Amino acid sequence: MTAPLVLAPPLIEGESLNGYVSRSAQLFGRTPRDFCTDLGMRWPYLCSGHDDQMERLAWLIGESPEKLSAHTAGKVGEGRFKLGQTVVTLGTMRRTAVRLCPQCVVTALTEIGPHGVFQLLEWAVTSLHTCGRYKCYLMTLPPAKHAHTNYDFVARVLDNIDAVQSACMSPETAQQTAFERYIRERIQRGPKNDWLKDLDLTQIHRLCLNLGAAIEGLKMKIMKTLGSQQERSLCQLGFKNVRAGPDGFKVALKRLHRQSTSNRPYFSADMGLFYQWLREYYEDPTLAPLVDLTCDHIFETYPIPTGKEVFDRVAPKQTLLNMHEARKRSGFGVMFLKGLLGHLDGVDLAEANLRTDVRVDELARAQAYVEGLINLEDAARMLGLSRSQIKALQSCGVLDMIKITSSLRYVLRNQAGKLLDKLNGLPTALPYRSVVPLREFCRSKQVTMVQIIDLWVQGELDGKLCRGEGVGLQAIEVE
Ligand SMILES: [Zn+2]
Image 1 (cartoon, rainbow, N blue to C red):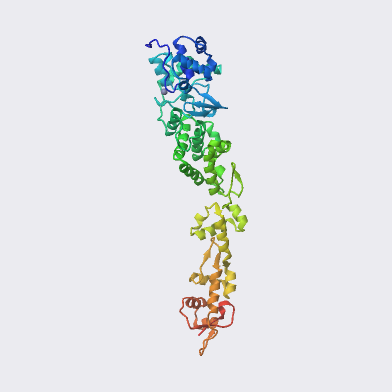
Image 2: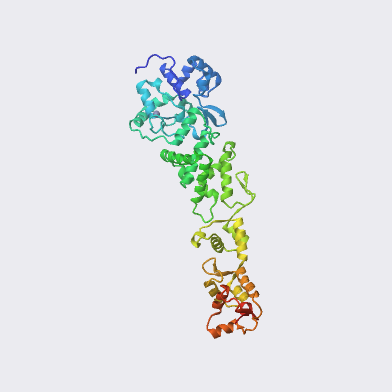
């Protein structure tokens, strides 16, 4: 040990104030409690960051009280603490359990001695799993008998020196993730002017962790058994999606919807752990931008009935229906409706069958389209032909063949109507020429009625037909 006689060791950047007092007491061979009493302070009050205690210590070591307060996790509200330049809640801060970097501690102990063993404030934050300097994983000491004993950092280290030294001998290391860098910067320099600036450290941690877990499709049960490495990578995955701002976040929500394998996707299931977290905390005003974006996404992407509340946002006029609701509103079977929408969109049946919802305007368009369809029987009756003749007219292209699902064929009512209009446009007689009814003509010439109708529609028989008596196209007479 080569330490000089230093009455007040200098404060190290980012170290905790109780850790500083703990190692200063070591210098004088005193307990922190006695050390404080000797110098006219009260150790428990100092640990709690009381103003008068801080002022006295500041005076004793020649620092400003403001500088000292940056080294304490002072309470700023119920369960909320100022940590460095940011705010954290108990959800991601260990107040009493002692976490530390074995490499930093052993190096300081070896090079300086117990009074050099500093405790960094950031070690209390469970969002950070590794040391920023040595990249090794942090370790947590077994809890002390009395919670307050944990504030005497150096004593806790010395009590557990074997475990600390052995962790230091075989360190497991990991590169700092972008998420950890972001957390660390916020502790050291405060929030940047980004869209998450109003969230405290705990909310940032939970946002990233739960979004990452939702993208990975993890369930709550697994989260309770996550190791440090898994938790780090989930936080990083979530952070990757939110760091780019609201647009990146929206892309992540769309991805969760796309990943759904359900026939009836539902937002709470698709968003998984992220949704469960937001449902618990949505009333926190700092989360309002996230809640707004999430609700916008839900209302745009899922069939939510008009006026239904999601969190505390009210669904606007419903524009999207699930297949069940669309079936109820339209009376169409689900498979028929999927086929029909596919037909209108020009996609094949296999792709059409993957559909899980319908926009209200699409449904109206589909209904109007179906009103314009007639089946083969009705078309046959309308045109005075047989079903097989209607099919033949479809085969040669006089009438469009409409197939919605694989089994049934339909005819467009207005196409059949146009044939009747064309018939009505024929003269009632051809002056000075003899004509015979279509059926008779076909029999004598050994041609089909469909062939004649096809030629007529193509304009090949202009001037050779007129209109006589009969049902539908049977009224055609041929020269
Ligand atoms: Zn370290």
